[in-house]
Length: 508
Image 1: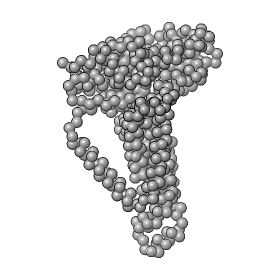
Image 2 (image 1 turned 135 degrees about the vertical axis):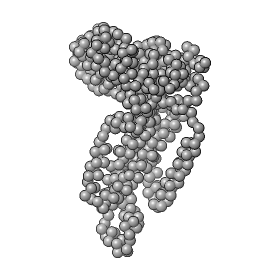
Image 3 (image 1 turned 45 degrees about the horizontal axis):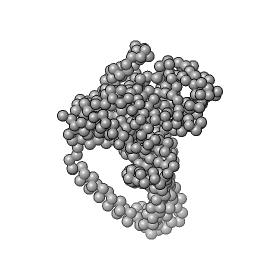
Image 4 (image 1 turned 180 degrees about the horizontal axis):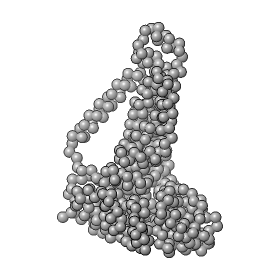
């Protein structure tokens, strides 16, 4: 693990991610302070409601971050907005609690002295109460700051950017240097923010207020100038976590921008859950993302009993998927050639020792422990289907998809779920077990988009369909290998393939 070399190679990306992380964290912190501090001041004079507010902010902080992000996407979309809202929610409790406690625990003698001098409510608050309570309030703000910066790494799961991109990519590609750089940068940022707040605490209240007003005015003016400039149409293309979706969305970007259209493509890679992307697409928060026919018919739509029978008999899942998607106002474009289906993966050493060739042979493994991600563990064509078809009863451990190969190679589990095009199968000398009962559906990838968007952009759709019938399983595995093992950028690998196969010709 060469951390320094990785840092030098990725320093440009790190600066971008750091800037995004700072922006998200600062905005969330300012909003949280603007809400929680006045609320704490108000609660001082309404103690009957104070405990209810403390309980409410405490409950908000217990909501799982992924659940909160998933709930926000249909309403506010993807990117920084839902991330900032979630961070504000988590930061309210320490700031509100410390503001309320700091003000209510002031020695009554100071209150009496202020009253004796004939101070108004505002004068007493500004000249006596807030200065005395400030150390406690700043303690809450510092706690919230550390919480915000640490939690902001999750913004990467919904296309919000930040240092979480480094951490997720490092885990997904088994690159400890990337993960460590992201984690260290996040920790350093938290310390820097905390030290900065210590300096702010020493400034007079009115100077801080003046600085905040200046920032708002300057920022608003800059935004206004940008808003007045003519802009090309922005097309948002998102992708799931992993090298393959990142390669595909970079191909989409190159193909869309190959013509003369006045468009700008914004990529949102490394989404953690299929449901996040699907919800964002349906709510018009993204324009398209690469999806697979098998995922559509097993997770995103509800086939009829007759359609399920046809699929089980080996029918082409693409027309069935599109008929059902049309009812939701969506369309899946023409799929690529390769079948990126599920696979149960074991180590070659275990396969040779116990004679493992097919999924049914897993019964030979003594006390087999499996590591599956939550999606595979619950899908009808995932472990439930395998369990029913092969009569398996494995001990299941829930693993994030980015961690499963690490757990397998280290012997922490004996079997995991994967995809037929995963570069890790070749990289770590693993074996994908055969599925003679064909439980796993056919997974052929294509751009999924809203029907209305497709009708509005026929030229772009035509360019995207240049990938139809292209890319073999071997080619996809090689491209994944180039990104995961050779550490090439997904954008470079995607463009090289398109050029090699003459797919970047200008639109006529």
